[in-house]
Image (cartoon, rainbow, N blue to C red; front, side):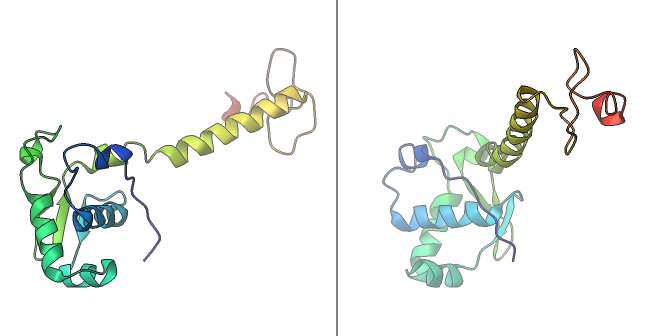
Length: 153
């Protein structure tokens, strides 16, 4: 299985789940890390109990908690439930988009790296195109050779 990650925000520990207990937080972290960009996660309570180091009953109670209504939740979807059981071992993460809204961080960092690379080339008086050592055309960021390529229009 490929490595994936999920975001766990600090406010998770300070809002409506506060005081829910370590097994609930461990279960929730496991769910988010295994959901990735999909809103469905396969979760076998017995297997998760072995991975986390607790009993199957504790995992089942934590899943009941995460699937139950939350009067203090900021989300009105399914009365604030975090998970919805959709099959014997399948759960839907209700607001996964909310948790992954920052998952574009990688894309953002890649774009920021590219912007910085182009800026450094401009500052050095070079064409922004990779590998080109020619100076840019006056008023442009690329040399005359690259000025009319499709990517620069």
